[in-house]
Amino acid sequence: MIGWISIEGTALNYPVMHTPGPATPEFYLRRNFEKQYSDTGTPYAAEGCSISPQVDNITISGHHMKSSKLFGALRGVRGV
Image (tube, rainbow, N blue to C red; front, side):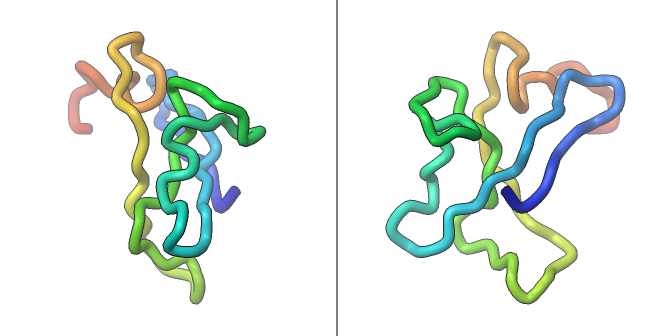
């Protein structure tokens, strides 16, 4: 885990994961925090993002679920 993403006024409140190395950059696309299979997955640092040395901006990837889970929680939020 490299951080946490939450947005006030939404249900978006999740850990942000990172898998170093080029072999599995999308490891958490279909896995939960415990590394078990999950359709929703867990937000993660996108491929090509560097977290070391410390940086100010990291692209976070994850699913936009119709059920309003993960980034689907942003549907209809003004200013996002």
